[in-house]
Image 1 (cartoon, one colour):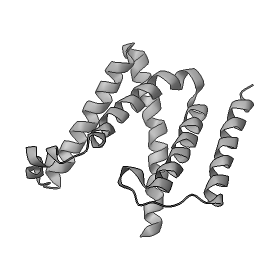
Image 2 (tube, helix red, strand yellow):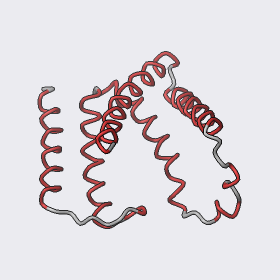
Image 3 (cartoon, rainbow, N blue to C red):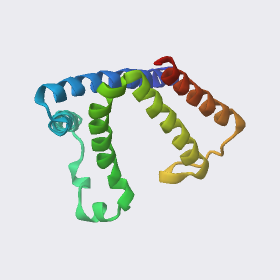
Amino acid sequence: MPYLLLLVPLLIGMGVVVQAGANTQLSQMLANPFIAGLISFVIGTLCLLIINIVMRSDFSVLTVHNIAQTHWWMWLGGLMGAFFITSVIVIAPKIGPTQLFGLIIASQLTFSAVVDHYGWLGFQAQPINIKKIVGVLFLMAGTFLIQWGKR
């Protein structure tokens, strides 16, 4: 079972590239990256609604009291999703998916190491070590090589 959990992120990575291509083409066809992003979110919202209905999720947890108990930063997920989708739609055709996702992944791992180290955003603190630092540096070097290879 744990190995299957490792397969899911690999599928997610491939899906993000497909998503970027599909949304970029939709944006070019509609001549509007924000409409393409909106369509992406509407379809995703409908899918999640259907999943919640099929799974018989308990919607009663959506109370004013529960919502009032949240921290302001917990609402950033949707904002960051909109920023990500729209940015990918705009930037992917200009620099290509390899460079785009190389930079995104390098940034994600670097910031993830900081979040892990300090235990921010509700994660359990996992101190940085030399192996993590070397891994992040290798990824940054790979991103540099991808950019350098374009010249």
